Length: 332
Ligand code: ADP
Ligand code: NA
Image (cartoon, protein in one colour):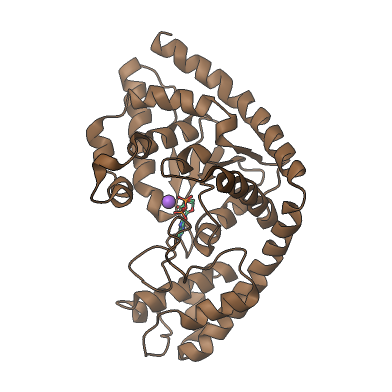
């Protein structure tokens, strides 16, 4: 009943990290092709659920667009746009605020993590975030959503909202979206503290690898990454209880387009002092062409703005009739 359609988004809330690249953007690129229509979004309405300096938000939005294109998103083949330029996201988000239940939102671990101890002082938008995210996806009747593991719970909520809407109104209108959480690097951890994910929204983590880092910075961060004293195992079982080793091997595998098993067959027995330079060289070889292309694209901001405006127009062609039908179902 539903056309195979991919939607995913990234917040323009800071510089892109290796985690965003491996867990999201690289996989967005892989999903372009004849199987799916692909729609990728800079979700600025999500970014402002925590404070964003307006000039930084504007710059980060353009830089994110440059990052998408430099990584291989083709703005002709995919629809590439900025969330706030398509008002139907926020409009459907309001409908979903009236479908989702308080109790569902209170269970979201990202809400608990981001609001911290002082929930009373968090924005209402931060609390409602997953409901807007459901609208981002369902305003396109998207069937597949590639994301990192941290978004798994939000996608379950998206499914719950679609199911409840369909039940409440006795329709089969919204698809029950499939999360696509695949590959070796669905959760890249911090190189400093293996219990936290690498995140662009955590500026205090100086160990994080940014997509715009130069070769020296990348090599230095990998050299300093936390590890254990043992050699690398040649089988995956040997990584059990070794989260830091596991993280570096996962990163290597994802960058090399190999499985963890394939990587271990090659590097098993090596010490980290040998493996880290291999990883650094691989990371630099993949990231530096992207960062130089990003810098080139950022020199022509008018062109970026033109691409985003065109993407928003194309997005609205899909979103507008779906919103109109939703209003009709609700009785508006
Ligand atoms: P961040 O947490 O870095 O601010 P976003 O919330 O904008 O990133 O998420 C953008 C996409 O990047 C999502 O699909 C998310 O799952 C993915 N992602 C973010 N951090 C990581 C990570 N450390 N490892 C894998 N994927 C990640
Ligand atoms: Na996130």
